[in-house]
Image (tube, rainbow, N blue to C red; front, side, top):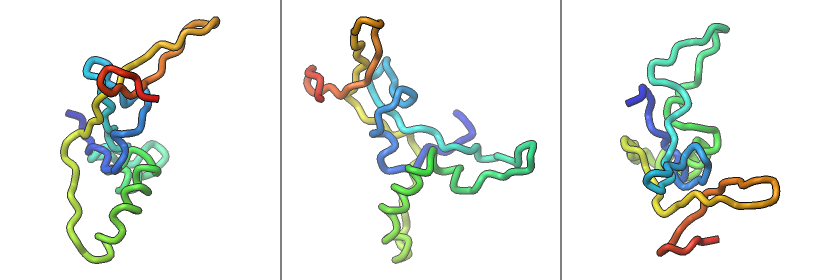
Length: 115
């Protein structure tokens, strides 16, 4: 297991991108966080912010903050995600055209491709 947390973003595992798609199981998985847990400064002396150890991107960080802001203000505990979340029911489809094919990832519902 990598020395990283899983992204805490609420919809990270629902965003359809090729790096999140696992073809063998037909699922979209959440990413790992951007920075390693034991990340030190780089060769130029720059240190990653602590939040980069919990989110894969600024978009996921902002979505999480928008969703959890009321809990933070009220001092309520927030669940920490310790497993990789997945969204099932996706398939890789080749779109044929005259310049060769391109692949796209599409949602499947009961064997039918959903647009």
